[in-house]
Image 1: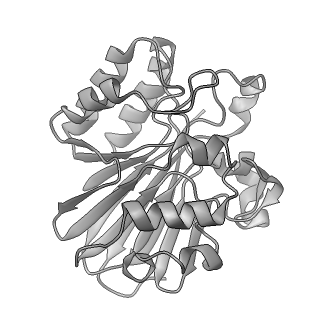
Image 2: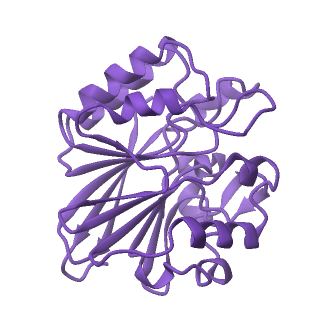
Length: 276
């Protein structure tokens, strides 16, 4: 199945193109076909930065990690890669206490690759902020503790520099709600939030125009979930949620249905002129 390309435009004080990849869920060399399809698609796209917003891997201890390293090295020859962490980076049986720091330190050593663990990277007057929410938030609170989310972000991302500010936040759940987002110290300074995690609500492409951002199924939420994919705004902040590359984990018993859902590469043009 082909990989869909979904395009968005947002207004900013820079003119740049970002490719957003989410939920690659690499597990072993069996995924090489998937990685090669991504490479082939990106070779035909002009862009300035590549952002990977979490779930790069399917669980904390993956097999054949050298294949993933090779894939990232190839991508890094074309553009700067900025990586944030998701919930699957924590999965290790019933232990969600930490992610594989050895693997991600090795990834961070790749030339032209930056792993942002509650860090900020400034390039060309753009501040990329990589938010790492702990396993506790995902697996103890099931992403439904607003106070925890607000307090955590305010503690770990307390202020932002001037420039165009892009937050890489794996999960859009709760943060896309005005009552939560507006309590963040950084709310007035964030220009763009990039997310994935929801896998497009497991919604076939043919239904997306009808459902207008609602997903058939949402993680930890239920059915017909708002903000499962697409572009949204709160005040002057744009949110873009990618449907992702992979629709389910390798361990999911329903993963054989993945052929029904096209993978997505999300392309965002930041323009310093008015856009639709």
